[in-house]
Length: 325
Image 1: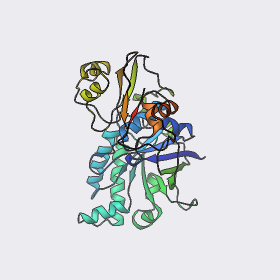
Image 2: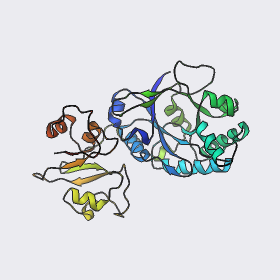
Image 3: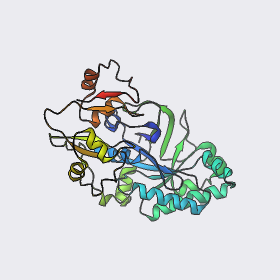
Image 4: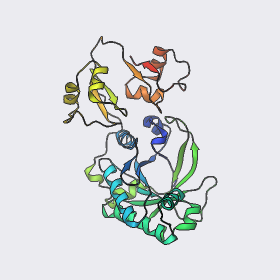
């Protein structure tokens, strides 16, 4: 069995997940955060989009733990982050040499025994909460710090770039960090899955999938008199309202937002659109792609290129303002 996958974090910017799925990718591992409850800035959007288009996803949390107790706290932060979303793949602890370096900078020496205890503490907490636990590392770290018995207890996501290495039993193989995928600007990690974790997890009754119904594979389009907008970092509801010629009260009512001060990056909201309305504009953000902007505003790349005289859709720049309609 060979299942085509990838993993992303905020460093990939705004991902066009419809394009990723259309390119044949069958699962995604999403960084939820790192350390003590520090969220990945794109996780909520990435998780929501994967759920929306029906792309199976799991999550990973980067280890900065100095002790098993720290690892349990990191697991709790991860669990809080993933709770609203349908996770059909494992919840993974990413421990690498950067984890050891961080510990050294804080006066703690990570020994093989301590590293194994840290991974065990995180994974046990994940399992206690009803999720499928996994850990991630590379060959050098495994051989230096982690017990060989650990991958008999938990699933392993193994990083080794180049030709396949068969000396370790692993369920997911990360084989490059310089992949290229439609819908993602720049390099991205690519993976091959050897276990159908979505089926394994579903059959075992894990990851609380019963309480999170499978979304339809295609989103239901909004009514013709609305557009959708994905909240960007720094946005406020009142600023969005001014931008689109409406009021924050109208947006709050339309989107069932009880507190207008509580919106978050990655959240998709409805915005009224009246026929004959004035031209709309958008300021390009870091990480944006023209295809991603087109999906966000319910238009096409061809339309955006025509409206703005763009000859190369791959050449857009943060800070430039383009016309949307």
